[in-house]
Length: 402
Image (cartoon, rainbow, N blue to C red; front, side):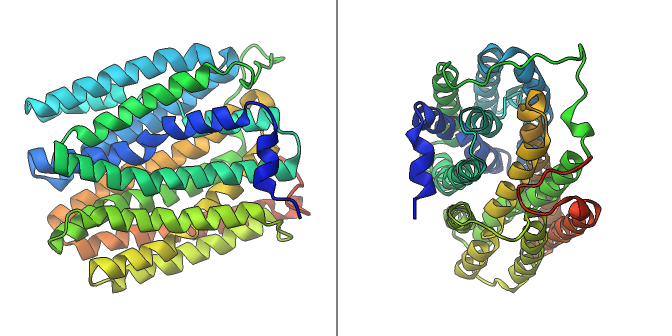
């Protein structure tokens, strides 16, 4: 039996753009938690910390699809370079404003501009779709990228928290933006694997978000993102409550580690069950493990539950990405993939802000109910998607009929 992960890298250039994408996506895991750690130290408020991180994440989620539409029209290099430079400069200004203890309103403005970032995971997956035509190997490639996403979330949060706690408050976000700059420049320098711009028959193309499947999957991942945003804040607050602030990195890493392991295994297997069926099953698993959070009474117990809860995350992402790749026209592929990541990012922003407010005004235990409610939404949306599109699917390779 061939190892699918060794097969996907036989094509020239795949190792290079995947490696560049891994470096460039670090802000996804480091920036939000870095801003939370930084702001909670400097301004002594989880609400301010969570809302600053939410503003940054929400802006990134909102701007990424707009940038992706431009990328589908003009190409990756033409759009990514100016957007990257704008984000890097704004982030440096944000960190300087926090250093001089500037008014909070000025940090919000800087965070808005800093969040204007292209979606690196979508750019990399678009390159995989461009160079890899075999559907099974493409699924393995998407799985591998999801594993890299989770490795970033294993390495990024503890590194960001440690730097901002032990070195200086701005150290975590600073390293994140440097890695983003280096990775993005390396990625766009690789012209051989950059997807070619496909001319559209229509002068004005409709948005990929008009596709009903993309709409439902985006909302589903938004709810999933709320869980992640809640976990970010709850990990820090729970660890601080128990007198071990650095332990927050362990809790976050365990969630990402569980997702990483399940994603790697998911991509190595050839599933006979239709993908929409799997989506529903992983949704119910997410809900069950979210309820288990209520039973955690110490950091070790919370970390263990987080590991189990993380097992559902990567497969859900892989399923969603695969469904979009099969059912969105090539001229809208980058945008379609980006909308899913946008939904996730918006959810993270909402989850961080709402959970931060709940923790400040009630207790950490009350914050767990945000994650549970979001998991319930994941189940509801996946069931709606299943009932609406199941009749159009005979196998995981069958396209949806819109």
